Image (cartoon, rainbow, N blue to C red):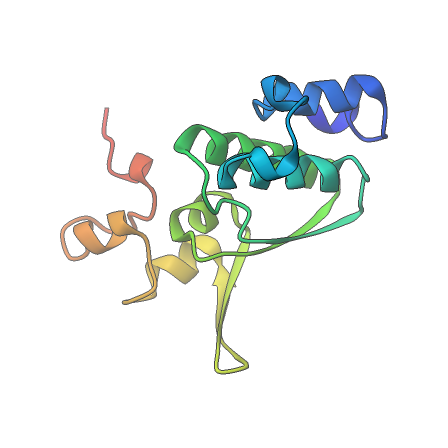
Length: 151
């Protein structure tokens, strides 16, 4: 697992993280020549290689494609399982619903709502996932896409 291999700043841990986030072909490029999404992934690599106990991320999915968003979510999940504390500030509602444990809403300098992710998005009429808005009144408690997929 990533958290075990990259928990210290080693060449092996660095290479694995760079590969996992698709940055291998960009190593010889100047940071200013990277796209916004590439810069975002490079910044995350830099932060993770410091092996912080607490990770504070501001809009970590901004400018990222769906694959990169899922990979970052998987990495954050692994870090959480390894005992790391992660705080994410985001407007990416689907990302927060999928990977967040607890969610809060700040407005005008104050905390106006806070709950476990599923309850937070399920009980919020405005600030919720697209799936929840589409299925409201038809199917109960649908927060994520997989909630509406039936076998």
